[in-house]
Length: 425
Ligand code: SF4
Image 1 (cartoon, rainbow, N blue to C red):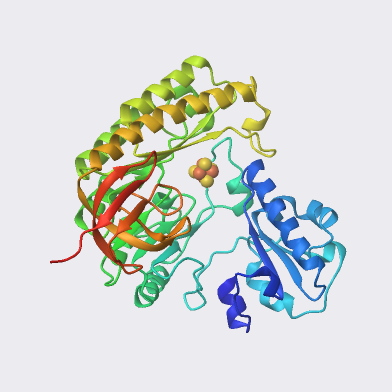
Image 2: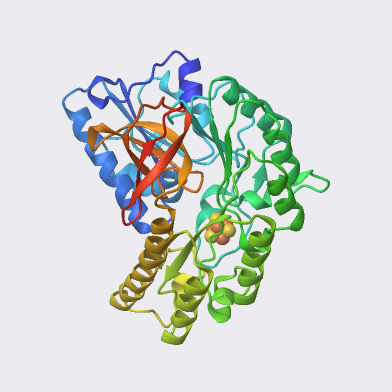
């Protein structure tokens, strides 16, 4: 969207009060995300109130999910743009204002980004995400994403390589490959070279120091994929495997396509192929029918594997998913208790792991001055993905943003580390 708007003559500002156009890109896969999106829209509607010349545009998954209702409930919004309609945005902004249901555009056929020239990353200059595919064709019974974003569509390999080359030439040091399921890349097309081929091509581009892959499906960790990761030092030995649960019966009802033993086997294969690999996962507490025994199996699995990073979510019944109609419902209070137990366990695992790093010198990507204090820099280890994992607070030494520096780790905090840059000489 930003790339298309810039090409049409718009300029980007992060200051809503100074903007002619207020653009909210929304998430809507679970109810808490919808609430956050609506709160942001209402905040920006207040900014617009004082300046009728401003336009407010809402785009993305919330529009795809609730478009017609939104046109009734949010009269202050000028345009609603669904997930497949955003290429039309610059043209729509050039037309006279419309009212009522005419403000809604959410019925275009599934769109896959294929261009390379219009990219305008909204991330700091040293970091960029590369979306390698769009949509998902898995049928997880709790998940609305395939309905919102459509079936899996992989981007052509040559446009991805071209876009990655442009990003490297622009100074990006860390490239993060994303999709709803990155390990499904190319699988919907017969004869497609697939993810290992893409990784090989991207890893050969000069300029990137770190290449990271997020959202890998636990059932798709193939020997070729692991061998490709192991063969290319720029590809970080970091795997994000959202297991969702650890009990066979719950996993079967979730429609995940693997069981508890498959998870353990996959973790073992990863650790054999990539010694010291960082493992991140996501799990869900309170799926319909989850008994205390099911939960205990999940808890034990987390304890046994010892993930480096873990996110735990409360199950959210989303209208339009199969699981939303299933009984017995786990009471919210009980789901919260189970999530708390997992968080406490994970905090112990992380604490021990971070403590074991104190005293070591590690490579840290310097990210800038900490928002908490001008006297602190922040950075990340290769084992820490931006925004979702912890970070390193740097209390001494000078480092340039976007550079990787040796840092002596001096202290462990609950989820972060403290360290000092080791000056050369
Ligand atoms: S693989 Fe992920 S995005 Fe796809 S349906 Fe399952 S949970 Fe949703």
